[in-house]
View 1 (cartoon, rainbow, N blue to C red):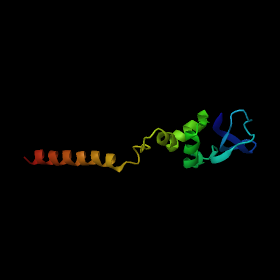
View 2 (view 1 turned 30 degrees about the horizontal axis):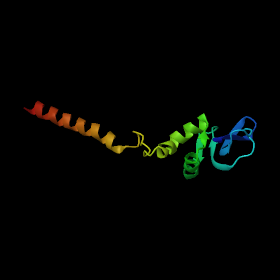
View 3 (view 1 turned 180 degrees about the vertical axis):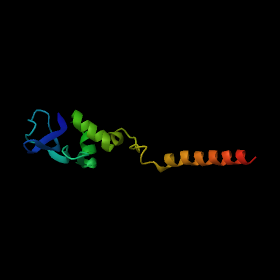
Amino acid sequence: MLRIRLRRVGKKKYPSYRIVVADSKSPRDGRYVEWIGNYDPMVDPPAITLKADRALDWLRKGAQPSDPVRRILERDGVLAQLNGAEPEESPEESPEESEEPAAEVEETEAEAEEAASS
């Protein structure tokens, strides 16, 4: 069985990882089939680069992601694409939601001014 997992690289006490597709029986830092991304947990926020199209292709072929890689794939929306759904936008990125409360505040201020002038 093929697994999509992390392969540790980097210096001692400064880990960096490659996201690779490997046989489940090979060692953590052993032979792999394809290198599909990088993960650097030492920067804030952690830096992740991923070839989403290759990851999606391997998932369709039956490769199983490890738990940390599953979280990375969910964050990048690859698993949502696999299930046929479009990746969701985070509420911070949606400008429509932030404009609506401001419009309601303006209406209530206008109503308050009309009531005060009457």
